[in-house]
Length: 564
Image (cartoon, rainbow, N blue to C red; front, side):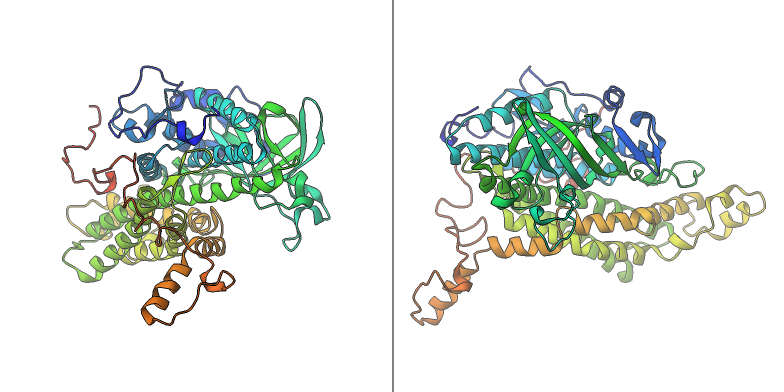
């Protein structure tokens, strides 16, 4: 638990045999039932929710999280959806795993893509990102302060989360109040979560977290700071774990997906099946015992606590790449189906093929950044766990954040105006209109009217509805705004090395000057992930040679087969 980095076990081979010991992996049904043991205070649309597990307003979100549990128990998906936690020798859900090598990062990226192909947004991967960031921050605190309890406390909590297969909500984004002022300068200190009392048993916190994904149907909330804190903000530099039904904790949430939309005949809309709730979470003197407090602004902690925020941002932006690639897969498949239903083969029609290729280029382009961030990841110097390469992670997230609108536009371009101009679904069953509509709105003779309309409404749901707008906004701002990613790219990218390159070619004899603004950022590798002295494969890293699931041809010999 407190071993130095050098003593960490070697990277686990790709074909690692699973040990007999396994954490308790819940099924989706087990997860739903586990929610009934909790009694959080949740309000949705002005009404108190008596039972989260049975609330129609939250059902799409619960069903989305249930997929992450069921996929982990599916032998065809287990390689990506579960992982060996080597230091404990147990198999755990991938969404709760601490990465040990580049293969773990690639597997996590693919696992998130698989989940989002099915659900649109998997949500649970935020727990993975926060746990990995907190593990790194705990090790950093120990090393900086010459202590051992930070690692030990986190390790005990990680074992608790993994062994019970918990879902964690990440309470990071504070309400913030006046954005021009720091936390300690706010007129109302409760715009940030902060420590209001410390005693021998633990701490008491108050304040508000503004955007907590999936909060009502999580088991616990992991409270983390949303920014770097200065000495005057010490009480706001707090990180702790809180059960969702802790006394003094209230959630004001929005419905998940579109549960209030009119029920369609036949299969429900995608967003009636899967969706995401977010909540404003108010902490009113919530007690947290010391064993669940990871740092709380004590002397020496403030200077290091910001690392948790920075590390989380990199992990989360890497995960977001997989999430939006899964969403892109839905648009690519639906766009091709719509072309066929309209009577066209996009391979034969350049005006359809070109936008379809553009949609593929965008999706696989930002996903390639995620792959690069995985392959060129590196061991954190304090914890030894594996960190995605930050430049590629931020570039991939920046691309998807700004190109999500192009993805919607391209889906609209290949689909035609019918996706928003169709009569309501009740007309499909109206004796006075159904027969006529089925006759005149059919295009491809081999595609029945109802199948064509089904795809059109699916694309409308994903791109031109309330839910479609929601996907755009979370893609733009989830994991930080584009400005934050641009700042991180500039901070991490070795521009100074490029300047040195041109200076050398120009043979101007300019001396190295650390005070020179454009040459401050340098890297021993001279390029993110490449050109390092040992080569592009770091010692001990497994070599991943199989193609990603999204690109494998049917019948590929390594493709897992679903059970019959």
